[in-house]
Image 1 (cartoon, chains in turn blue, orange):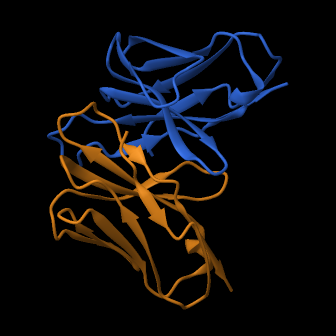
Image 2 (cartoon, rainbow over the protein chains, first blue to last red):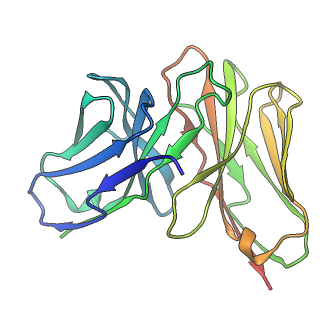
Length: 116
Length: 113
């Protein structure tokens, strides 16, 4: 299994509070991604990173920010959590193109976030 | 944003049945098509990555084909088993854009013993 961990694995928080989720990898992969999983929507990309301090928005980025100060860590922050952000959040990593399997993604175990 | 469509949305089959599902994607600027298997309460795991028109990949009883000219891929499961029950996701990756996959919503397969 790829070395990807997410913390916390479960969190309950109140509306309006800031929340930070952490994704940590030991694979030295260049690309890291944050997705959310919601019923009827599958996986939707929130933000991704293509290198240290290099990030870009996905399709559902409103209300979220990210930071990547080290190759191994990618942080997702909800500045002021809302109930609509209750979801399961998955981090994923992938290798730079030119490797044997282009852009295959490896997923972390997920973080279940509940905003009350 | 690309539209990656999967059908059917869900599927119930009996153990031993063979089944297949479809992923359709925009064919312009195509780079790669991924299939992932996602079991309940687990994380998605890669099944196949295909890049060339006419590609066929196989892993045990599961196989996939790719048609990049018309923008579709089929996933086949031969002799379904209860442990094949999962959601199967496909995702498309295009050239010249940003480095991200666009996922379909998945096909949820239930294999009844």
